[in-house]
Length: 243
Image (cartoon, rainbow, N blue to C red; front, side, top):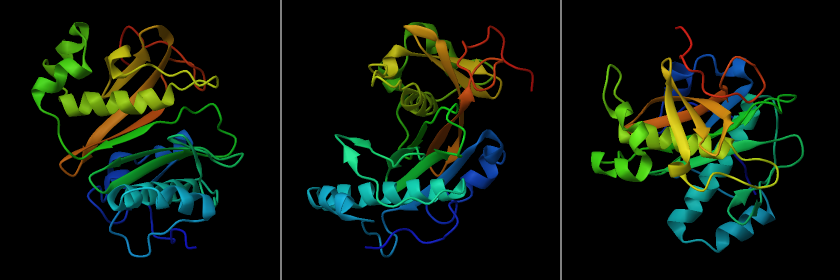
């Protein structure tokens, strides 16, 4: 069975150029980005576990699943790691020891972010949304204390805020399997040009999320823990960092 080729992670698809242009300093954070699309020629499982999982899926979902695995392997390759097949437990991908990545899909495009060897302190989370959300969806994404984000000097769209929270939701996973219940349980705050997102019930764990345009939608990546303690979880600062 074939795996992804050596094509550069940012080539092709609706998010062409986004990794290189919107996230130029990504390698310095210990992260690598991979992109794949459902229309790629030769899209196939990398092993029997992926093949068995894909065989039970409708065609559209099957190609999304395989594109996500290809994106994850490209992201891992971007940080110098090779990876074979990526099985799953329930809906979660299961990576071999020493490898980890976060995967997201939207409208036929899959993205993944992986961390470099020795960077277990780096939180992982990504989200791509290529179908913009209407303003009326704000009530499903934001609580009243976050609604000012929709206006002001730098208004954030509902799509941007939902995507940032989705990426943060993945990054705020803890080893015992607990996650925030939904994006409704997360609190977003401005953080310079980015967003700081924390679990409302555990504000000491907060991440910095960068949101950038991708096609008709957005791509969001968790860049690290918020606060002034590199490599350690911290609260969203009272004042955003200077630019």
